[in-house]
Length: 161
Image (cartoon, rainbow, N blue to C red; front, side, top):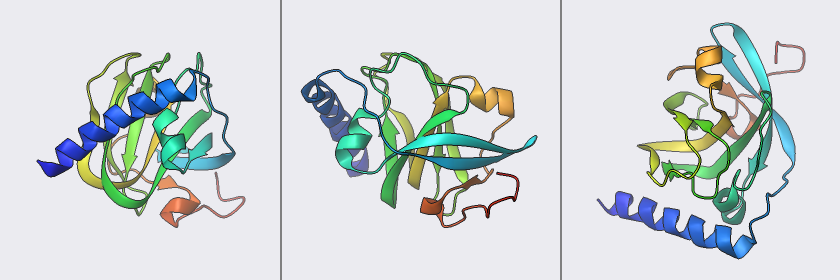
C-alpha cells in the first residue's frame, strides 16, 4: 500500500513539475535502443530521461512522435513505476523493462490527458515510450528483450541493431 501511495504522490509531483516547466516540450540527447521483436531487431532513437525533472516532463507537450523515435526513462535502480498522460498530447505505448532488459509489462494505446496511473508494481529499471500502435505493429510482448547500455546488454555494432 505504501508503494501505491508513493506512486500516486509521484504522479502529483509530475503534474506540478509540468506546470512549473511552462508547458514546453523538452529536448534530450538521443541514443539507439533496440527491441528484439518477432520480426527481428528494431532500433528506436530514444531520448534518455535520466533525472527526476526529465522523467517528470517526459513526452509532455509534444504534438508528434515518429515511428522510429522514443523516450527511455532511466530510474537507475529497479522500482515500481507508474505514469499517466497529464499534459501529454499524443497517444503512447509504454514498455516497462526489468534491469536485465526483459519487458515485464506493457501499457498499449495510452490516450492523451488520461489521468489513470499506468504501470506495474514489479521493479523496473526503465520505461520505453513509443508511438501508440507500435506494440501491436511489431508484435512486442512481455518477455521480449530491450537492448541499451542501462540494461547492460547493448548490442555490438553490426549485430542487427
